[in-house]
Image (cartoon, rainbow, N blue to C red; front, side, top):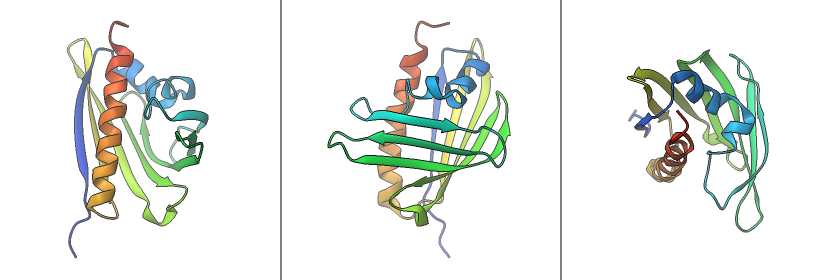
Amino acid sequence: MPAKPSLTINRRLNAPRAKVYAAWTDPSLLSGWFGYPQIRKAHTELDVRAGGRYRIVMFGEDGAPLELSGVYREVVPNEKLVFTWAWGGTPDRESLVSVQLRDDGAGTLLTLMHEQFFDDAARDRHNAGWMRSLENLVQFFDGKE
């Protein structure tokens, strides 16, 4: 059976690992950088522990609700998060996200791997979204440390 599509993205952030980890695990910080500017985040719930759930509700430009949810599979504070990823409209297409953080001088090297996509088109759409979100995260930290 062929491997399912995946993607890997690396970004260097001008912040220590603890602050980058907080940007992923504090709902108020996550809402500050995650997604596209035209998508309004309405609600973010994060129960950051192995077995804990997360849920993010957003509204697109057309006002349609977009719900993203999953379960944290692995949580290593300031080092690693692994969680499932499913959109409300396609829960049968669950995928897996891993975020690893490593020291890089005074900053942090973030490696994001998103695996087990349904098809290449889903991977490509998520790649575009992650590229935008991670650019937002880079900008979020510029000038803060």
